[in-house]
Length: 309
Ligand SMILES: NC(=O)c1ccc[n+]([C@@H]2O[C@H](COP(=O)([O-])OP(=O)(O)OC[C@H]3O[C@@H](n4cnc5c(N)ncnc54)[C@H](OP(=O)(O)O)[C@@H]3O)[C@@H](O)[C@H]2O)c1
Image (cartoon, rainbow, N blue to C red; front, side, top):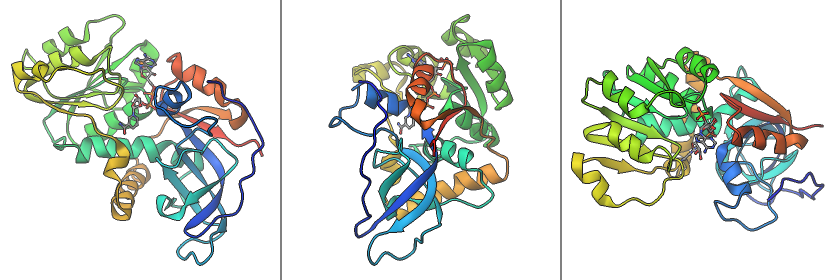
């Protein structure tokens, strides 16, 4: 499927909805999966699941949101690759005034994913844990490494290039493995003195999955949050491993969960615990170039689209 720039009617918000004029739009790998049909949806569709914008209209009887509010959202519904969109008022959160729009559009989906992975999935990362993070210089990976470091973990990151290795080191990776030059399983084994890591965060899937299992210690936790192939449960047996495949939206089921996760992410950005690398900014009409660069692994840190008007 190809991305095509088109005029569409946005319409007026109905009950419980708002209309938002987007100021900055986050690009995520899941957008590529939808465009390529890896995840199914009706076509044609407007991609995108993360944006920051100004409220331009509120639905009848709606309270709590006003025209002029700056809000952000991540997750459902799809459609953020647009100048304006209609959203359920329940999915947006207010953006703190001191947070730049491009930064906010880079941390809603990626930051709340890092929050889920480190603070809510199955077990929490704690001081003294050694964790392995694949794609450590990516959008999620960069935030994950910084946050895990701040929680006291020893962070091992894998990346493909020297340039990405420099960012991963800057983001608090204690050990950076350039997997195109070194065998990451052997290196993790060496770093952990043969014991293995208590947890692996694997956003890649097929290419890294079995290697990731090999990097875990007895009773270790495999957090697979990309596109893993099916595996037999018996693969977990040799080390009594735990396995979870979490999805951010399942951890944001209530308004309270959304506000808590977004609040923690915004607070960590404000305190500089998380430094957001908005390394790639494209006009919205050039979204296809952003996808090509993301797919070709040219990007590191966050990618943001800016509406042309
Ligand atoms: N489960 C959830 O709720 C959830 C939420 C958000 C994101 N995710 C997943 O997390 C992953 C990262 O998302 P992101 O938006 O932050 O992307 P990203 O990490 O910025 O970009 C992908 C990176 O993955 C690495 N990579 C490894 N194999 C690849 C391949 N075959 N093709 C392209 N890249 C490959 C590349 O880094 P190197 O060059 O260093 O290898 C690339 O830069 C995606 O799989 C996404 O679907 C899941």
